[in-house]
Every structure is written in C-alpha cells, then in structure tokens.
Image (cartoon, rainbow, N blue to C red; front, side, top):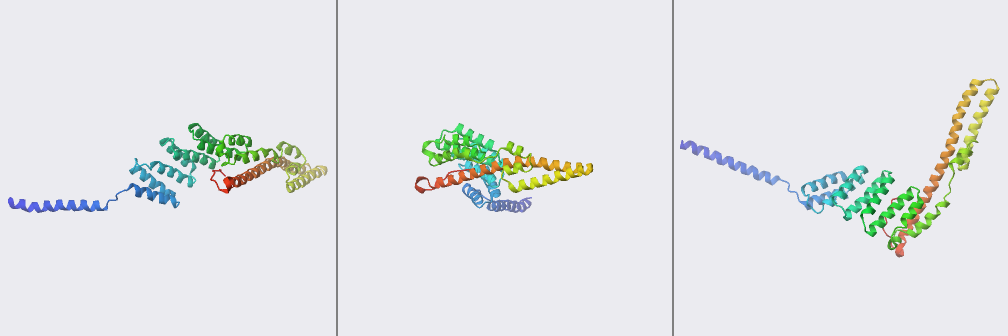
Length: 309
C-alpha cells in the first residue's frame, strides 16, 4: 500500500508542474493592451487614410479604456472617418452621439459644425441651417456665434437667398467683421439686383412663335432649329390636307403638336437655366472675391475662414 502511494506521488507532482508550465507559457503569449499604444495606432491609421481600420482601433480603445480622457477625441475621430468615407448619415449619428455624451466642449462645437457640413454634402440645406440655429441657441461664445453666422450666410448664398445672407452677415461682431470680410460681402450682395434674369412667363409667351422663347433666352442656335423644324412640319401638314390626304396631314399635325409643345416647354426651361447660370456666376464671383479679401486682410496675412464652397 505504501509503495503504491510512492508510485502515485511522482505522477501528481509531474501533473502539477505541467499545469504550472502551461500557465507560464500562456502568460508569455498574452497581448497586454496599453492605452497610449492603442490610441497612437488608431491615430496612425487615421492619418494615413485607412479610416475603416482606424474606426475599429478607436472603438477597441474606447472599449478597453472607457475612462480615458481621450475617449471624446476617439468618438470625434470615428465620426470624421465616416465623413471622409462619405457616409454622411452615419457621420451625423456619430457626431450627434459625441455632442450628447460630451456637451459644451470645444469638440462638441466642432461636431455641430460638422453635422451642418454633412447635411450640406447631402444637399439638405434646410437641416444644415437648423443645425447652426441650434448651435447659436446653446452657446454664448462670440467667436463661435460669428463662425456660425458666417457659415449660415454662405448657405443662404448657395440657395440664392442673397437678402437673408446679407442680414446674417451683419450679425457678426465688429471685431470679426474684417476676418469674415463682411463689408465686402454686404457691398457685393447688394449687386444681386444687377444679375441678368429672364422671365419664364415671357419666355413661354414668346414661344407661341416657334423659337421665340429660345431667342429671348439668347439661345440663338436652338431658336433657329425650333423655328425651321416647326415651320417645316406645319407646312408639310398644310400641304397634306390641301392635297386631299387628311390621314397623312393628321399624323404630321400630331407630330408637330409634340414638337410645338416641346418648343414652349423648352423656352420656359431655358429662362430658368439662364437665371441659374447667371446666379451661379454671381456666387462664384463672390467666392473668389471672398478668398482675395481674406488673404489680403490684416496687411496681407492669410486668415483661415471656413467658407463652405
């Protein structure tokens, strides 16, 4: 009985030592996460434009180090990654989450501006303006308010609402009016009445004579084509009826009706296109003058102004 105990003892000891060895081996292969290294790696991925990997690494950082002071920056970076990947709806949600979790911080202010920019990229100028109004309602910081008014003014310019843009620019504080070239913009915006415009109703009325609407909108080649084509079809239909062929005359008349209606619609559309083209030219001119005004401010020192071109 004693011999059996002595035989079993070495086996037990060997088993215990084996477990200890395996434990040490696994401990040696463990990856120990370090907050600084994890965050730095996420930053490197973001800097090189690998936004998908960066998003995953930022989320890993936030999961393992939820109390770290850089969590807000990580959340903002995730939202920016979506923005750079043109996933604007996801970016809006991510920026909003950053605002809600960290209200009234400099990054939450940036998040509000980025939400507005996301809406602009989605061609949703209404929500872009609403976002800026909400920002104005929650901050008393004069510089932030001026930046919001500037951004809102440029949105109104893009919408062709020049009077509203001029009114918003005038709300910028005197100390920042040079920075945002308010005097120049106000002066130039008063010239919107000089933008050449065509009346769509007049274009439609003049199109009673085929090509008249195109001629009014300065589309001379289209006017000539419309006049000749409609004239030829009208003449062909008349001759068919005159020669006792009402079936052919009816077919040609039906075809001509389509071209004639298209001539009227084209004249009206040409007036709208003319107005849009002239307004766009006016806006582009404003942008160029704003750039020159900003770069020439304060004795030629270039200033950084966010203009949503």
